[in-house]
Image (tube, rainbow, N blue to C red):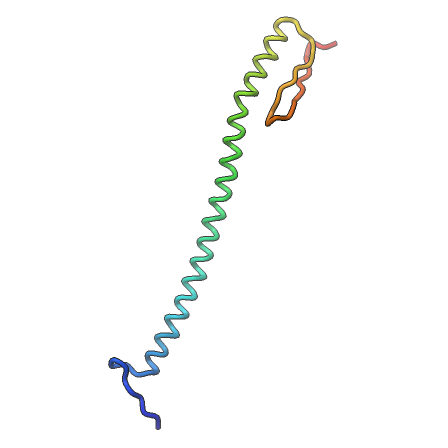
Length: 100
């Protein structure tokens, strides 16, 4: 028979079992926390990308509106040439509806 000396009123086996339970609980908390952080970070990345795209398109809106106004003015003046505008720095050709 082994002698079990109490540690602060607890037996060594009890302390060992509590420590094992605490370690297991900590591992579970870490895994759940990692999954939660991954989910939140993933959502933040998607929101950031979509928000950035929305801001970029919104900033191009003025450029497109200016081009549409310019095309309308030249068509009203009787021009028959195609118009060229830019969208995100790329040239976009708008064919004239008056061209033969």
